[in-house]
Amino acid sequence: MPYAVLLDLVTASLSYFNKKSIVRLSDLRDFFFDKAAVDRTLLGGQNPIVYEVYDNSQPQSEGHLNFGVTVISPGKVGSEYFMTRGHYHTKEHTSEVYLGIEGEGVILLQRRSGKVACLPIMKGRVIYVPPSWAHRTINTGDGKFSFFYVYSADAGHDYESIRKSGFAKLVVEKGGKPEVVDNPNFIA
Ligand code: 6PG
Ligand code: NI
Image (cartoon, rainbow, N blue to C red; front, side, top):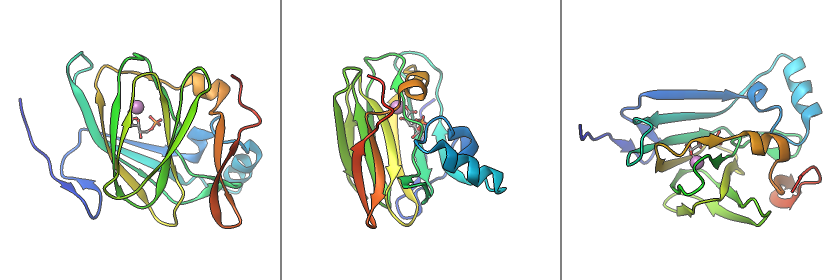
């Protein structure tokens, strides 16, 4: 059935969602560059929430759209800012739209050929993620970074490619500012 929800554009909260995911540092060990820094934090007894996803999940069949809000906490692992895992859609021809709501961040995009793009996201900015581009969002600010997304419900998520090869670029803090640098561990 058709339905409506409210998206609070100040607090970036949805009045309704049917799936909430909480992703902690321990879930992301394979995705951050400095795994020793992840281990030190975990061994120190801390396992912070890196991001949360509030999803309106539809049946995973062609024609439906999933939409929701992702909230990334502020923080870093070594010099790398808190971020999402990042993924290609399993159905490579599917696309996605992001709308910045709160805070500052960037979206890192990458094709399997190794071609990369990096676009800032902030309140009101709409980003189009075309088919075949992997995407990862990164919180480069001091507060929460939240955005709205919508994508094909049957797209699927290929996290394994990113787990194995990473992204060609890392977003790190240098001299108090975000910088996009080459990932020495990237496997093309
Ligand atoms: C998607 C969207 C988006 C994304 C979250 C978390 O296709 O589902 O890109 O909702 O899932 O921002 O990012 P990861 O799925 O990469 O962990
Ligand atoms: Ni996606």
